[in-house]
Length: 379
Ligand SMILES: Cc1cc2nc3c(=O)[nH]c(=O)nc-3n(C[C@H](O)[C@H](O)[C@H](O)COP(=O)(O)OP(=O)(O)OC[C@H]3O[C@@H](n4cnc5c(N)ncnc54)[C@H](O)[C@@H]3O)c2cc1C
Image 1 (cartoon, rainbow, N blue to C red):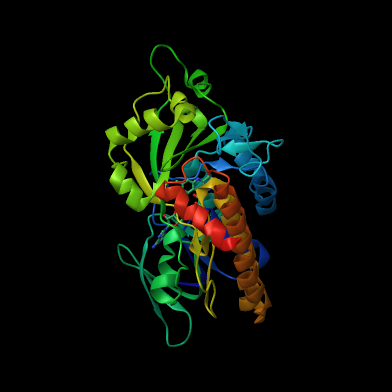
Image 2: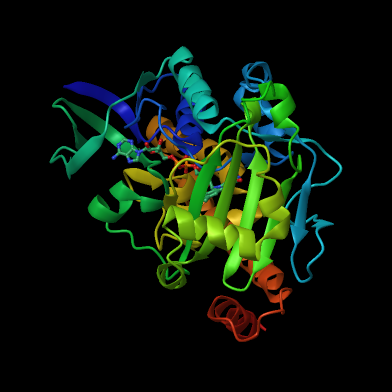
């Protein structure tokens, strides 16, 4: 049995930022950071826009981040509302440099920083169950045995919000049905093409391309690989059969000339990875002894490329709020955090609605009709 003041469940950007900040803001509090994986598998979300730089600096991880060699990203182009691809400011701050991330390496780097600040940071530590203790706080049961007693829990489990929904009674607001059907293309390593040369294949920007049933995106990754994703609603995806590798490839060729041209020179892609990408937030993001951060609190359409930055920022804010509550009994920060998440989500929703309303080429398509209706309702 481990005892800690705060248990952070989930070692993505949100959980790691919370653990790092708790240790610097309230060093008297003990923190355990529980991450289910060993950062070995596929981790989605690769484009980090320029405003993230200030957040990484604030966390004190900027130097390590720079040393990791993530790919610089010089903007985003979108074939949206017309067949031609244009630079797009909504998706990116075009004048500044962002990054295409090796996501697993990025998340693992943050986890190491949490450990260096004195958090008991663990990998392969999945929280299977939780129950409230009679004397206050929580007992968390870990996979493979072992448990953690904590006065306060930070739910950083990502979009599933596993702890807040199962144990704290929070409910997600109604969201859309967007999902990503994602494949990774390895560098074109044969024929004497080096990884660096291969990295230059295709468009160096993040590229977004609308089609009748949704939109595609692609971005180059460090080491010369490339990610390509088809984003559509789950019911439409079933009709398209897009989870099937061959159908996916046919759809790419038929519906996305800009994105499709980027895979030339790459090796054969890996399997289709499916991820929910709904935009929604929890009706409650905090209680007396828990708080939700990152995608667990609210998840944004990946079109915004804001998920990672938002997760880092909310981990920081939530840690300040939890630190004040636990160290001084002051819950004003928790109330401020709740208002912040609600306002941030409202602002995102109105931008998203406007952006989807700009695409009018397929009025009969179910995917776009749903979004046009949302725009009309908002108007
Ligand atoms: C297809 C797609 C593309 C995207 N593209 C971008 C992009 O280009 N740019 C961008 O900024 N964002 C993007 N996003 C969003 C971005 O990935 C998320 O917003 C971001 O990862 C949220 O961080 P997080 O820390 O809240 O959650 P996550 O990154 O999901 O991390 C949650 C962590 O919790 C762990 N975990 C879960 N359950 C447990 C448990 N029970 N016990 C212990 N650990 C647990 C998981 O292993 C994981 O490490 C994209 C999302 C999708 C679906």
